[in-house]
Image (cartoon, rainbow, N blue to C red; front, side, top):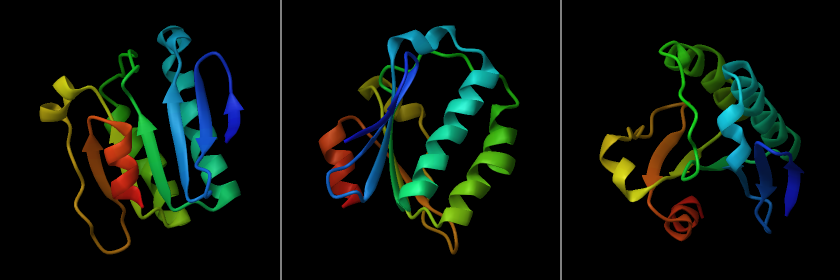
Length: 128
């Protein structure tokens, strides 16, 4: 079920409303870094609204170059929102060629588990 869409990205909710899904559209390549951050905040805002504890982020179409300070923002600003909501699992769907470079986050007390997948079905199987 689509809950938000614009030219840069769309946000969907799985039919059982247990997983929120973020997908990048082609036009996102022209976004500023601030627009990217706003998109991420919008996404997690919908997760709060629907109280979903599992996230699927599809980056197969992602083409934006992020600055070096992205990791600092992610760790200090963005991920704490995940912790506050109680996100349990995050699945990234990415191109097969990117799998060897992608990091995963093992389960830790009070934190979410992050795993990477080359196809959406495997991601959803793991999120179930």
